[in-house]
View 1: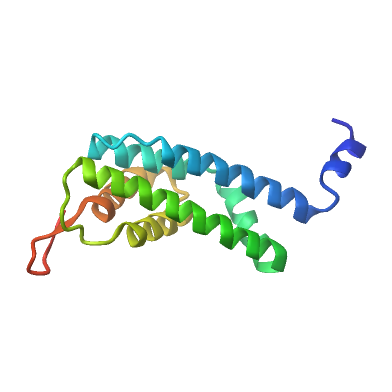
View 2: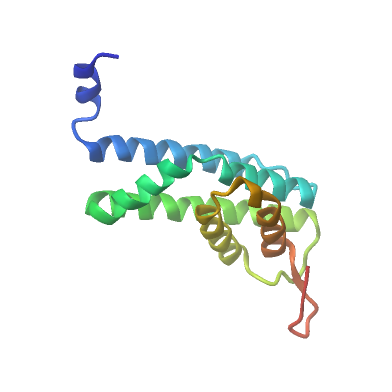
Length: 150
């Protein structure tokens, strides 16, 4: 692609970053929508793979850009909200498939926490611990007396 074509498509850095943010968002929501809910271990591992598959440098750049550019910040908030909602729906399907009646966290809170942990987990050696944390967030239940079982 020629430089003129590139600048025609993305007149400024904000437009390029918005495009990249939307691409990342579309990848994640599609992946969340197609997550299989049948096995807790497979579900947690696949979810971690989706979240860890993002380029950490790109994610940091997106976060920094949202801190500088008001227009990007609003766009980032809107895609993050939809991402969280689609992940919450996937978590609800997985819980239903496992017949979890009293989850320790509602799906929306578990989705929020999972995304926050995912944003901060850039160390590939910590993937196993991340999977365990995700499994607890998603599949832990209360015993009715306020105690949580994982």
